[in-house]
Length: 153
Picture 1 (tube, rainbow, N blue to C red):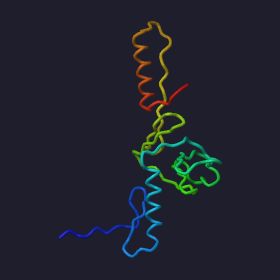
Picture 2 (picture 1 turned 90 degrees about the horizontal axis):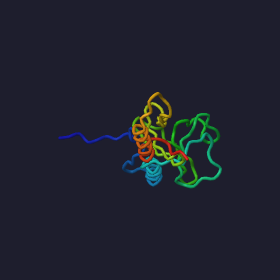
Picture 3 (picture 1 turned 90 degrees about the vertical axis):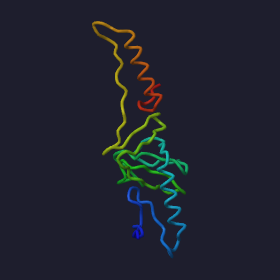
Picture 4 (picture 1 turned 180 degrees about the vertical axis):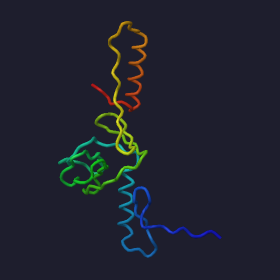
């Protein structure tokens, strides 16, 4: 016969709280797990900044920049999500992907946040291949549209 699963008090990756039989205030633990899950599902940030915005709405998510201040001190590189007027923080894990709404670009976490940069389009040379330049420009535009490179104006 299989052994029953014995759970710890939280999930392994993002520390979502578990419930236990006879536990008091179960709604607190369920709501905490839902708030953290809301930050983690299809994460799209407002952008990156070091200080909490003075005006933010519940559900807003920010990537905490280096040199964090205020309520965000000590949370550099983490996601800060406003839930019920309180900032909740999620530490990133390798493979996590977020979309930065301010840049129109995806970032991936792999021992730090990685944001691809747009390569410089060729502009000079001994022999200029017009077709190659056109194809390269189309490739850059396609990667921008896919959220790989930041949107430029």
